[in-house]
Length: 342
Image (cartoon, rainbow, N blue to C red; front, side, top):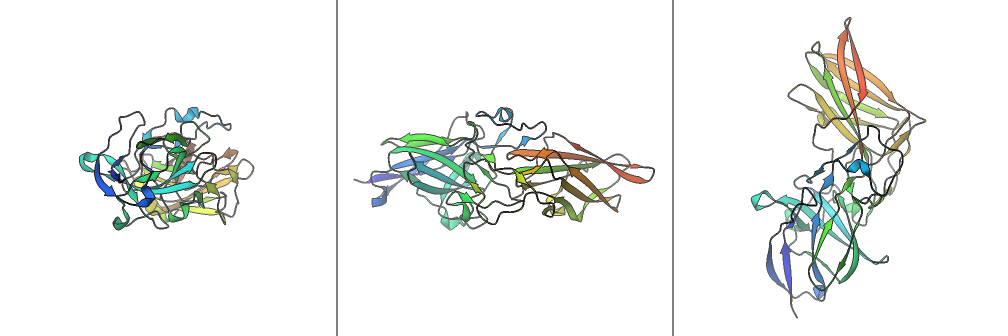
């Protein structure tokens, strides 16, 4: 018997509670691989914006109360993700790639894609018309974005400077979705994805004594963070561990990574591996042109544990007193949005 092959526009949603939209066309499919299998429609609940790390807790709970007031956002246009469907009781895992696109009417949808490169990019020729087919049964569903080729088996090497979002089984709001597929078409709504690493954001502004601000080519240097791994350091669904940093290990937020607001405020950010600096400091060195004069500021961050999923926001206000440029450094909570580092 032939089984109809549904080509689904898999709709991506800003909020999980919003109505779910989609459209489909039909094709005949004689493939023996799909006999007795069921076409599955995947709907993603969005992604949580990073939580503000101001007063971040050091303990964990099954329900993450800090996520209650965090925005759920769309994935960026053209972003990619891997979906993992794992059979009950440790069964085999089937993997499907997707691309986020905006279709007719401005609705974001998920399009199946056959393969991705190491950076998670894709070719249009690889965008597939074949949806995910699964045997009837119980599955758990999880996802990671971007869909780098090396992430396809759920075991990943994630480094400083990378931005990754994924299912996180530590919290009810972001955990894997369990669903039993019967003989009919299945529709699975994933929980929102969550940032895997920590994030540092910087907002640099001046008083009325500062006429111009710019980031020098050297950018912002962050010393003492966790070292990049030599192998796998993350499995999709896990909560990444915060580890001791190495004082000789550093990452740079380049000048090109900073954006200038209409008010002349400099904003930049980077992802870092979760780092425990309660015993050894993380040092931030900022290289700034203040009124066209090269100026360097250095700050130590001690007694803190950078946790996964949190954004550590720092506001630096520059002023000139007695002809000397001074900086007031504060950890703060602010809501200005810029594009994430990929």
